[in-house]
Length: 367
Image 1: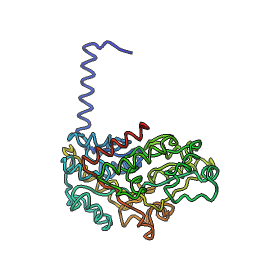
Image 2: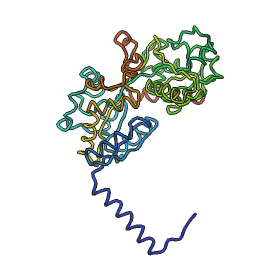
Image 3: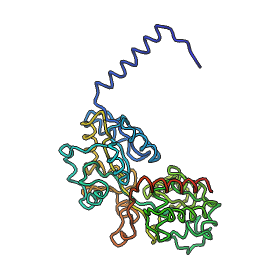
Image 4: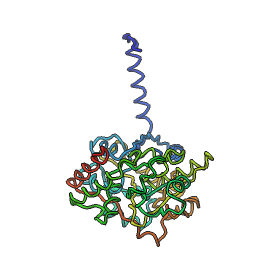
């Protein structure tokens, strides 16, 4: 309902706003931008108790949302959580700034192999600190799949998704895929025996046609819903992130609904990725940003984040603090004998990105 403001009301409102701004300015803050459901509130609360810095926490549910903020150059955030595959793009665009490593003494806990692999996208490890890592794989409702495809069906293959004779039988129980061209397209290319990050337009046409062939049997492309829908029985199969599948299993067990969510690492290969912490250009609270990142580098803190999200972390001294159910799960902490199944997600050129985006748009629209 609209109201008519008197001069006195206007003055009072202005005074209140000024007071709120002054109150914020008098307290140290750090503005954080992260994926939805990717950091426990208790960690934020404990950070404030220990440091006196008040975290202002916002979330996004797609990489496009994050990209629009960071590439603006004035996001207003102090710490953001992009994928490592986008680092070169942000570095080249001067959308993020180099870290002051003298303020990150807890970085000695990081795994050297992970840091070396991260140098592919961040030479010298100057701009990013790893947060969580994982794979993009298949999650499924075991009983529903057995009912649709038989109890002895081979789940360790992308044939379940990409062969029409299989996925057509799953239409009624529901199939969901990530709305993520930078992950689903490489999976399709790799399945076809093509370079997972091809630069050839014709290769993307083949991947597009493969995905269009199964499009009628896919319930939706969405990066936020698949975990909950697997847990409550609205999907019987999804292609999504390993931590999302682990969370789906946890939710189903807690609800005692009889749904058993399983995971599969297809033998044709699965992409792995890492999410990182960066400081955007023109971050208004630079010292507080480094304090927050350094806090997250503590083994006890990052282990709590892994325990809450279900994802592995890159902290070598935190592994023993991660719950056994996570660190002993071969779909999360991948055993060495299966690591040859993993291929890294990589950034692509602007030209290739446009080709991939056009191909993906055709898949989403179904034409």
